[in-house]
Image (cartoon, rainbow, N blue to C red; front, side, top):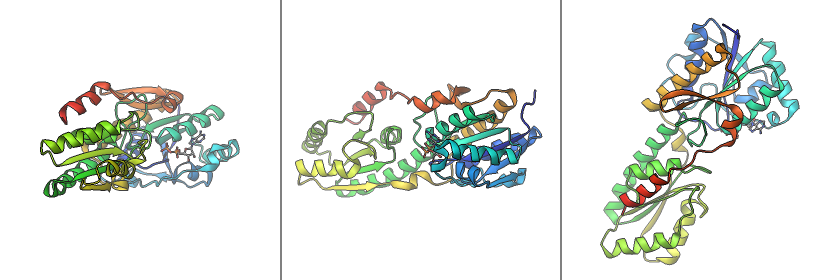
Length: 326
Ligand code: ADP
């Protein structure tokens, strides 16, 4: 039974490759079901400023392969306040919008949760974040692309590290979550991986580097997440230089390249499946949930659970890293 007629889609918070593929899926699935579909520019800010545009099938042509987001993204302070959310609601109502799809991270879901509690517009969240740190889904839109970008860069760094017998400390994104560090570190054979979720014993790392030197293993890569307690790659380098002043050490911070670029096959498919499922959820009356993928099946998690929980880091993976890099 059709319970909605006019839906809107927006991208909010940190951008992630694959957001465009998700927007495309929402728009085309909505149009297939004869809904009017609107695109909101700049996330919640566009709701407040009434930057709400009708979308057609051709509005999303030629974007599945593009990084960034054609709807743009932003952070919006006013949306934290009830008055801001009321203004946003009034603007949506001007277009008779009765369903909202929010593509973003856990902050965006917190906003959507509050909005859906206060007003009669159901919200569906799609996890668009390179960090993969949202409960209720095995993967998030953008993670696979970001990791592959990091791998490509780290492979190149290994070439130059090998030529000079150097120790490289490479910083990848992840303020609270170490998934990019963990996955890119394993895939590039890093000697050490430092994640915010795990206390790293720098003395152990130093001892290991010294042991490697004794056995003439002279190329070492340390992949560190930006949010690691040592202060990221620069902090780690300082500690190592202090204890091993003769080590030929370099730092490379990968930075925002990890957010850009054409999404991988996995991210395009994930985003397409999630966008399609979001519209189906609105039509079926499954409201105020985040669409996730668990064991390769669509899985709905109430928005308030998607907000709070973090995924657990698998201790077996952490153990495996140590063994494979020894
Ligand atoms: P992300 O979605 O990538 O985690 P943010 O945490 O910056 O990014 O959240 C994006 C936007 O969502 C914020 O700028 C704000 O407008 C809205 N938002 C975040 N948290 C809340 C909250 N607790 N209440 C209301 N709105 C929120």
